[in-house]
Amino acid sequence: MSGFPPATPLRISTTLTEFDFDGVYRFLSQEAYWSKGLPREVFDRAVANSLCFGGFLGDVQVAFGRVITDRATFAYLADVFVLPAHRGQGYSKQLMDAVVAHPELQGLRRMVLVTGDAHGLYARYGFTELAAPDRYMERHQPSIYTSV
Image (cartoon, rainbow, N blue to C red; front, side):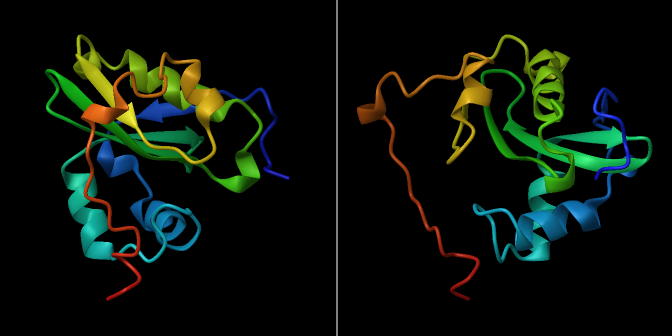
């Protein structure tokens, strides 16, 4: 199916020159439920202003995630995915291991994320439901990419 044995560990990189940003963009804009229709210029700006993590099998990128952060007190984890052909092999855990261990993300007061389907994964890394949801507010425009 994937062409790689299940035990193959991911090589995690934050070196942007190694990333297949065309492939990452294609997945996010066409397949991810949270970002369908994402314009390329918005994607490029988001990547430029984030700490990005790529998961590689050899030179092939099969996983991605990014963290929007001030690298001091706060971080927002976004756009985490493993390509469908490579799911079920523990790669999301390997990617998250690298995210939570990254030196620039240590000592943060708060890290948040939004997920529709991966609560179990993130709970392994200490994420919980909001302790005080009544304090959080949002300005949510879910169809912003598809209504233009």
